[in-house]
Amino acid sequence: EAREAALKATAEEREAALTAEVATLKEEPAAFKKELAEREATFKKEAEQREATLKAEAAERDAALKAEAAEREAALTAEAEAREAALKATAEEREAALTAEVATLKEEPAAFKKELAEREATFKKEAEQREATLKAEAAERDAALKAEAAEREAALTAEAEAREAAL
Image (cartoon, rainbow, N blue to C red; front, side):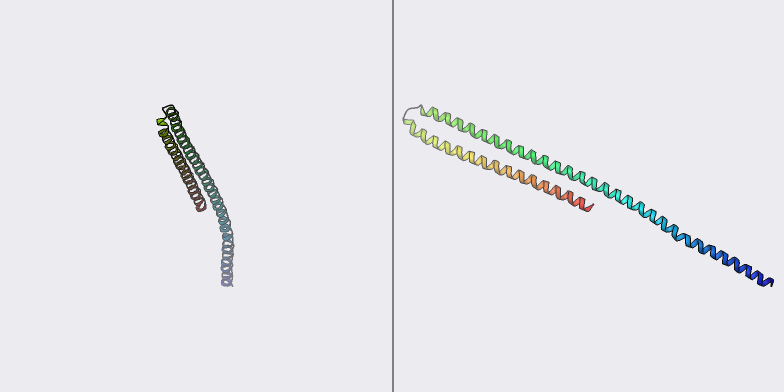
């Protein structure tokens, strides 16, 4: 009977120890799940903050690039317009000089009138050709500068969008 009582007591102790161990093991997954959920929430917050920061930086870069492209385009347009105005002024000065020369020649004897008429016609043709050439060159430069500025802006915008998309 003493042995049986001792065996029962030992069995009860083992059963109690195993029951306590089972309870502890049941609590561990819940603790791990809670810690995992907390870590996941922290990671999500950090990821959202990083994404927001990257998006803001990309938007700032995009705005800066667009502003820079607009400034370049404005500068190129102003430069082209200034060149065109200078070319027109030069052409007008030449035309005025030729007109003055024509007036002087008209005052000369009749023998020079024929030569004067020929010179005047030649000068007018040259002046018209020069003016047409200068206007065409100025228009080509203006178009090229505008196209170059548009290409730059498009390239910068595409690059900024690609960066933003990559982010």
